[in-house]
Amino acid sequence: MCQHQPACPSGTDENGQYARIVASHPEQGWYLLCNGVVLFDDGGLMLSDHRVVAPVYELAAA
Image (cartoon, rainbow, N blue to C red; front, side, top):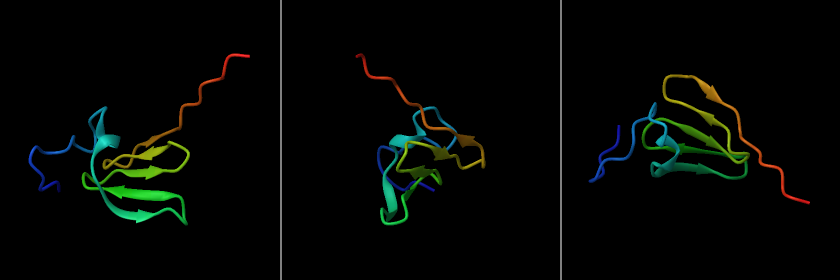
């Protein structure tokens, strides 16, 4: 899907969320990346092979 040089990571790569945004819908809370990944505002992902990756939250030190 990606036409850039250098090419973005694939949609199933562990760094796939770092591909370029091709469609932005911040009012709905999601972004489509050039490799087919859907990135959600909460940090969750839907990969190009339809697997879902839950957002990861880190607790702040008190």
